Length: 158
Image: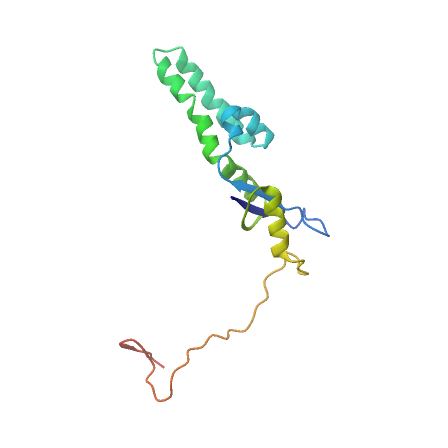
């Protein structure tokens, strides 16, 4: 079972009938290890792509020095970082653009997670962007009669 984060678009971008829901798998981005620049461009992570190109340029400069062996080892680090944290970079992009994090859901694949989400949503009539309804504060402490008002050893002041 995979865990998916659910994101709704900002209210300005939401469609009237049904907002577009994005499901982002929580886990490793396997394709990001194989071709990191292609993966970053595919997901439109332009700042991360610029940082990646800068790091690779520095590593390429190290190849011309006596630290050639260290440069080969260092060339693996950006890809490994994207493998581990690539999907988190996508989640941060959504949040910067104003997407609303709704929650997490589990499913065998993305299709199964979508089905579970819409089953749980259960055709709610309220927009997901509406504010929660406020209710009166109904919490109270029930005390037996003739008991002093105190919490433990400390009396409550009136």
